Amino acid sequence: MRLERVTPKNYESALALSVRPDQNDLVAPVVKSLAEAYVFPDHAWPRLIYDRDRLVGFLMGFFDLPWDPDRHPDDRRSGLWRLNIAADAQGSGYGRFAVEALCAEISERGGSRAYVTWEPRAGGPEKFYLTLGFRPTGEQSGGEIVGVLDW
Image (cartoon, rainbow, N blue to C red; front, side):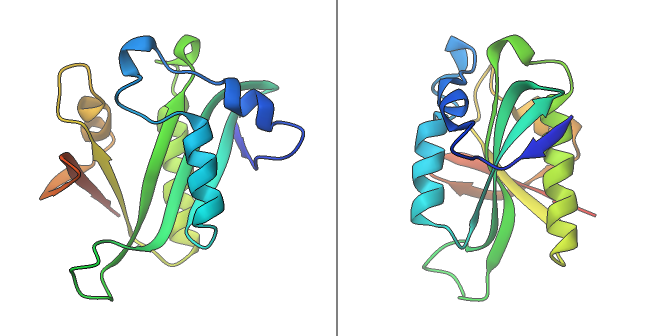
């Protein structure tokens, strides 16, 4: 498994990536993530997840993003902004690989924790994130639970 940058050669494949239909309300499509990466180039870290030559997912991390404009300006965080694993590739360890790779990148940049948010509903990704070691912070963002992983 490996992460690759989004390029003119692979972006159309990235745009065609889709999660299971029952997950469409849990994660934005890749096209929205790429638009956000364009708008926030200093903070977004979009990457494609490959298993050999097969595209299996999309990850977008964020670095030093101001958490909340109403909080102290030094409250800047890094973590997982978006994770889309192809419908036919789920349950194969790609999500775990992607989160671990993002945490390694955060570490290389001097960080020691990663944040994520998830929709608190049945069928949502909460169990996945808790299994990886994330714990709820007690905060919410847009109605989603905020989780943190320290190392």
